Length: 92
Image 1 (cartoon, rainbow, N blue to C red):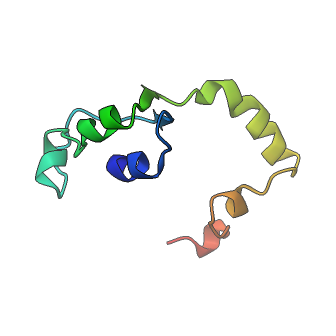
Image 2 (image 1 turned 45 degrees about the vertical axis):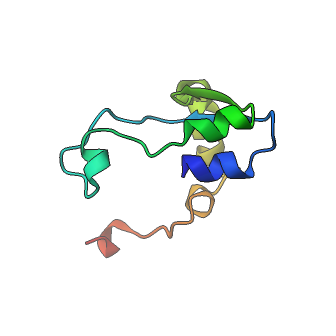
């Protein structure tokens, strides 16, 4: 996926990688993921003079406003995340 991002980024552009990449997942299906290895072509980034930024998403900066928008029905969270809301009686 990161290689695809580099392929569509303009020369001299930036690639932001927010989120959390764990160091390893022994239960992963992919052997590389079991040890936390990413398939990345750093040469592509160098040739295209790309900048990379990483880090965890600053969720605490937004959570209060998001919670208020959901509670006051200014945002439909199920629609935003492409999910269907069901009652507890309908849940497995």
